[in-house]
Amino acid sequence: MMYRSIYGCVRRYATISQQVSRPPFEEIFPRKRMINRILFELDSRLSFKKLYPLFESSYNDMDEDTISLGSNVSASDVMLMKKVLEKVRSRTKSANLHLLKLESALLDKAAEMGDKDAIALVAFDVLKDPSRNSQEDVDYAKLLIKDLYKREHHLTLKLTGDLALRGGDSLQAADYYQHFLRLEADTYLAGEVYGQLGQMSFQDTDLLSAERYFRKAIALSPLEYSVHSYYYLAQIYMNSDPLKARTLMESCATQGYRESFKALGFLEMHYFGDLYKAQEWFKLGMELYELECFIGYFDCCASLGEWTLAKKCLKSLEKMGDANETYKTIVGQFMEARKEKIEKALSFQSDPLLYPNTMKDGSKQSELSIKQNKWGL
Image 1 (cartoon, rainbow, N blue to C red):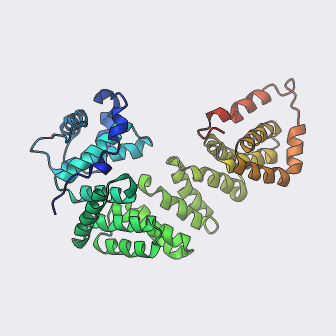
Image 2: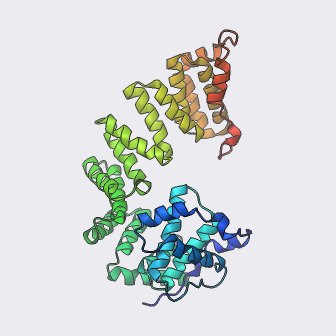
Image 3: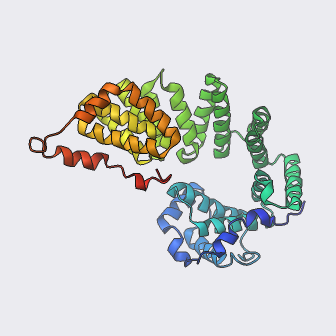
């Protein structure tokens, strides 16, 4: 089946980008060292020297109907460029609007050149949100997927499972995933599928199957793409093997996985009894305004007799409760459960003459500006 561009989907960043002044390419493109590392991971036959001018010309042609790359560039080369930008997003934990548009344009170009993975990605992107696309594009996307599915195209099977899971049909999703694994069971993409199956088993409380799937996901996928598998596997081991759980959760923390900070804090506090280390994990979570981390930090301070820090943490909790109705209920329950400790913290008066560094250090360590909260708390 011949492919035509589905502009409603692939040009999804075009309108926004045109309203923003586009900076010179060299100002936003990642450094050579990062790109070379990514190319090595992707086992690329193309070097940075070869790809840089292709990226630059594609960037400059983004507002045209199609980008021009020359006759010696294949569809797989274009998909490689798209994957490089995708990995940049994953590595930097950020998304530049102009590079997002470039990634979208490269995906469209690869699809036009006949790359089946690109065609599948474009078609499924349309079906994820049909309301943002014309009925003609939706019908055409379905035809493309049907054609690819008949050919047992691997990525199409995986994406069909994702779409079924998104629609709440976990049994159908599992069938599609198992079909995919019968064809491809030892790649990083298979690792993603094992991770999805693991989460489904975890939700069904089939922990033996979940553990098996998560272990396979971790073995096949890089940490940045399997962080959920690390997290859920740590949850499974939390009671039976806390040391293993801590190691897995620490891996999640290196990726900035926010749920890992409170889990590590409570693990250090309740199982290993290291209140100082627990404080450090809670502080990281407090920077992300995780309410449970504030509660855990207060408990650590109370147990250590650090009442100045406990008092400051308490004030931050009160501010969060005043700004958010959901938090208000939880903070109220917290106040009731720890009434004696809270009274002691509020009545505590440090003597700056006897302990000149107490107030200074406490202010430094627990200064939590509500204005900096991205939710406006």
